[in-house]
Amino acid sequence: MNSIIHMPLFPLGVVLLPQMSMPLHIFEERYKLMIKECLEREQEFGVVYWKDSQIKRIGCPARIAAVLRRYEDGKVDILTVGNKRFLITSLDESRVFLQASVVYFEDEPEMPQTHVLQRSTEAMELLRTLNRFAGSEGNSAPPVNADASLLSFFIAGQNAFTLDEKQELLELVSPAARIEKEIEWLGKKIENLKT
Image (cartoon, rainbow, N blue to C red):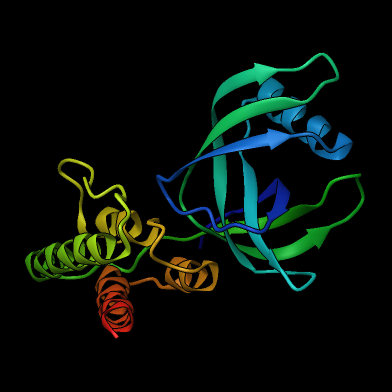
């Protein structure tokens, strides 16, 4: 059983995925305090998708990779990188910012990886096709030597997907299932652009 970790939470209208970079401008007093503490303690904070006044129970911890700019009034620009996913087991509202007890989880092991990697190549090609139809560049260069899990999250992190789709992909514990879902959605998006 994974151990329970206590961490500060940052509910946002975005979905952070493992290994995804995300710049943030921190301006609210409570989050300036949270980021200050995270920097002092070299601690991650949890990013959870906030929609319709509710937070999703599955999120992604953000590691502060760099402080990009500090402002005189305490605001700060940071660059974060997503880590492995977590499930919220309980919320703690005792401080000015939300905290939670969380349990980390990873993908279930799958074999063979070769088939999933082959399907991820097909997903990447669909992504390039969609970007061509949409007239956008997109980031279509996947990480070198990425495994199936990392490739599936790389694809999920592209602008082709809605926030709800990204959240659904974040919650899946099978790289193969993520890739198949991505192929299905990309195919539909390409068909919609053709009509």
